[in-house]
Amino acid sequence: MICMWADGKALWTPCGTLMAAAQVRWTLFLVFGLLACRCHGGCSEVDSLTEAVEGRGFTLGCISCKIREEVVARTTVDWHFKARGEDHFAHIFHYDHPSADVLHEAFRGRLDWLGTQSKDVQAGAIAINNVTFGDAGTYRCTFQRTLILPGYRPSVSVEKEVELSVTSVGNRETTAVISEIVMYVLIVVLQLWLIGVLLYCYKKTLDDANAREARKALKAQKEPLHAEVDCDGVQLE
Image (cartoon, rainbow, N blue to C red):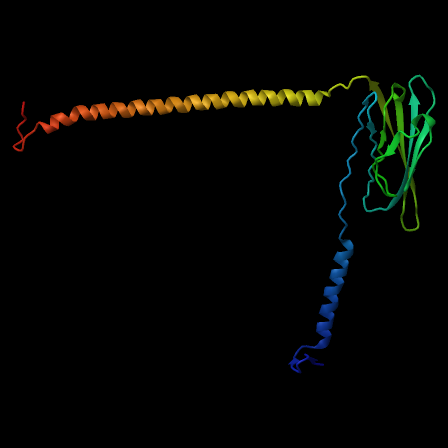
């Protein structure tokens, strides 16, 4: 067979060869399309802060990253609290998208969900409003994650604890203090360096000016000697 174009011109190539090449191209396109993975944002498990100030708000952080980002999952998050001197944890908060329920009277109206707003939760942070000294203690964050796989749905449970202390006045963190000290040291060093550069430039300019004046004086001393020589080459007194 001979393939015919729309304008009636014949192409002396077997149609079977062209069709096979087109099928190969489409097959490769589909394969690479299936193998290409979707892009996901990175997840990093950062520890929560552990010092709150009385009367202010505080965020209890809790992050549990999935090993395989491409695997769909459904996750619930529970928070438990054990006050100092107590032996047992009390269930204070439960999140199952889209509902967020405060389960303890002491925290009623003071807890807000700040974590992932979806069924697949990786960040399970909550905010405590109007912190009191009674909020000091141990908080336990529990992720109950169900992986949705073809024909198989394994469950994974992850627990993390945060030891919270409450103070009347906020203490500045060591990192902030060190950063401020380094900033002031750099400012002083840069100012001294700038003063040194200005002094060097001033001295160099002054030396150049003195050298230029010395050359002018020397040139002025030599010029009268040449002026006293007449046309015959005899120097006049």
